[in-house]
Image (cartoon, rainbow, N blue to C red):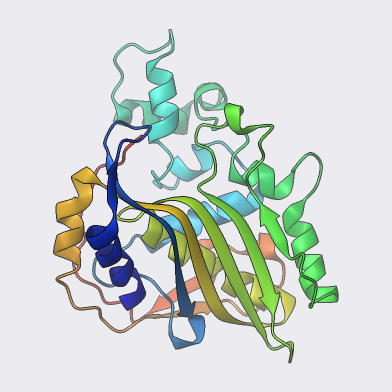
Amino acid sequence: MKQYLDLCKHILKHGEIRQDRTGTGTKSVFGYQMRMDLREGFPLLTTKKVYFRGIAEELIWIISGNTNIQPLVEKNVRIWNDWPYETFQKSEAFHGETMEAFVEKIKSDDAFAAQYGQLGPVYGKQWRDFFGVDQLKELVDGLKHNPFSRRHIICAWNPAQIKDMALPPCHAFIQFYVSTDQKYLSCQLYQRSADVFLGVPFNIASYSLFTHMLAQVCGYEAKEFVHTFGDAHIYLDHIDLIKEQITREPMKLCKLRLNPNIQNIEDFTYQDMELMDYVSHPAIKGKVSV
């Protein structure tokens, strides 16, 4: 994953210090692009261990159209916990509960989860019900029956509902492209805001996985993932962590195997996904800026 390390180095060298919504501060650049050939291996970062199960379960959750964290926390996936917990802390129902206590209550109390586990109309809502349009269904139909269309798009950025979302979509616009010989499927993601240390390794793997899944159910092979950024930033409290990471030598990419019997994008489970030969350096922990 030299491409990712090059992005880190580019921001460290050329980024400008900026204040941000979270109050943490960032070093940021505007406009950057990476390209990854998915035929060469699955682009799961090797310079630190990345939690693939969390990535896969989040993608399955988005595909399902769900916008409540309960199905994720039931599987001990904590990617989205910080935002609803912050909202809960501001409510009259909050009585000093820790994050751990909050998560346990989300797991065990359906009524509590329905009220305090909701994220608003985030990715799953927009993918599956953008004012009544099932964008994912239309994408699959288009890839199967009109491969050379320039409208193979999912848009998560819905200006009318941004104010109702716990976090406006960072990975906002996805487009797919079928090769002339109708053999390969490629994906380009436009990410308006990119937390390079914590978020981007997940985003690379998530959309590469999504491309593989779509390719399988639509009759193609995954070819290329193109990652285009708006504001690509390193939070100031991640600078030293990034500097540690770029000293590490990348290892050989792993391989992804999907259950070949799955032919419907909604039928995938984590058990249908297998990473082969994933070897990485140890994890590096960093704080999420909410």
